[in-house]
Length: 435
Image 1 (cartoon, rainbow, N blue to C red):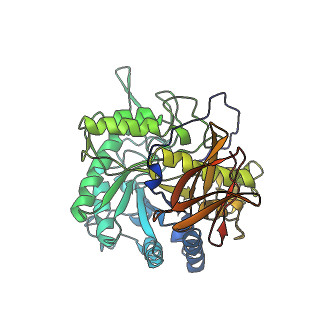
Image 2 (image 1 turned 45 degrees about the horizontal axis):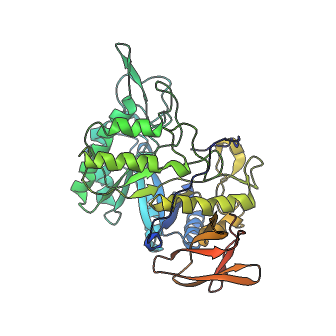
Image 3 (image 1 turned 45 degrees about the vertical axis):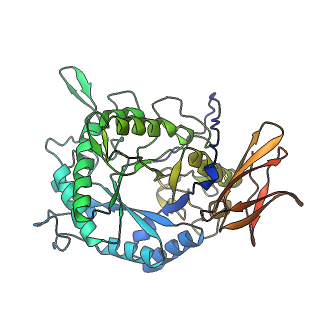
């Protein structure tokens, strides 16, 4: 999912008070990238090394069901069935885990044989009413193939017709949120299958795209989608979202049923209410993961965000999402994609240019520091240090504060003055935060 419009909005920036003791909460960061499963072993290794060396603790890999099982397996729950093609995924998972990276696998994209009847001609491949039972069988086979993988996400952006169709149906003149209702069945079937294969599996919902349309069109607004899903019992362990923004990380979505970076609380509030009512089970708190996030940068994309702002937005988005209790954030792409097909259909959101040269965003990812002005002529400073220990805050050549990052490396403090600061931890220095 991507958004390139940078039109001005008249909405006020978000201001969420930092809760007492909040700095004890950590934040894990990682990447998604197509090259994690590249057939080119050199590209795959270089991308995984760059992710790890930039500070990622985990990676997200999309598992395209239609690629792994292009023909129907005779024994679909058996990962050894000859219909399955696991080689690319084997390489990606194995190489990532050998580097100490935790792996999140996202199951998405149905094969033709697993799509439902009455397929619309306009439906994108792999989207039409995927069989919940067949998806559950595939999930069980995948979990048996990769017993060391605990984290599983069910589908990608199911609120878009690019990934799940139909989004809406009409019966007797009444619209029905077909995709949300069908997705609930897909999620519940997968949850049961994954827990049967490995009771320690952690199951994530498919992250929604942030923006939608009025009912009946091709995109369902995230708040609408999940409100429909939670009308009946839904099983999952972790809630996920993709809060891309049309502008910066403090720009609210115009519609209150859409959910950009500062609006994620709208969804977590909905989840908590569903848990209380017993509509979401198991009845316990659901951690929040951001499983896609990013902006395209300039360079290389002339329509992208200038490099310095790109880095600042990355760090500030991490802070804004952390304040809304995000536990993990996945940045979309380690390295920019080749723009051969055009900038409008490729991602230039990496923290490295296609050449491998680091962007400013690479420093921001490795040592994110964000700040905001508060009352009394002071500055609130948040960051995640490269390691635990002392962090010094500087403005120019003057030291304006010191703080200790704990084992989770997150720190939160205030300093005097209104202009930005940089942080130093050992031999590493952050970029200057922009309040």
